[in-house]
Amino acid sequence: MEAGEKMIKKEAEIKEADKVDKRRCPRVPLASKAEVVSGNKTIEVDLANISCGGVLFHSQKQFELGDTMTIMISGVYRKASFSEHVLGKIVTVYRREGGNSYGLQFSSLLHKEQTPVLVAFLAGDEGKGISFLRDPRYAKAERKS
Image (cartoon, rainbow, N blue to C red; front, side, top):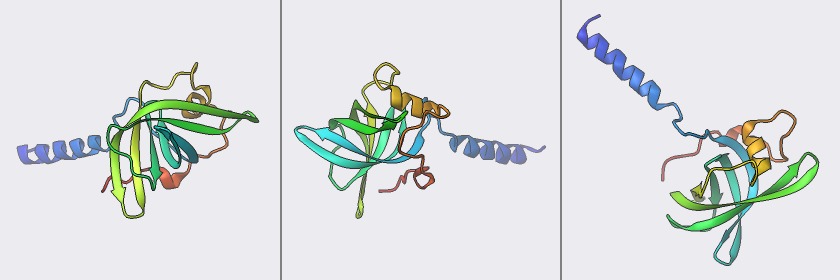
């Protein structure tokens, strides 16, 4: 193989490697409502995906980079209602005409002791799902502003 061919092959390998999600905690798509508590206001938001380190949500409300808030996620787990909340900070903002998308990084990774239902959902425990479903429409968040 000639030097030019080797270089082209190496570039193709690099491009393919860039497509791999390098997150420590992979995202899991989901479609659900949640509530965000910011200051003394509670705002309903639409979840798009979640990982053990954060969540992507959509809202008409405008938040700013660095805003700290608590997100409350409720549903049904093993036929019983649950509500779990996690503290986080806005680390990504996508502004669009039809609404905004926000990346909320949790202040610490999700732990089974504090958020057992969300951890079970992320682990994909068979038969232990919660009422909201993994929705393929939210498999990839848009990255353009």
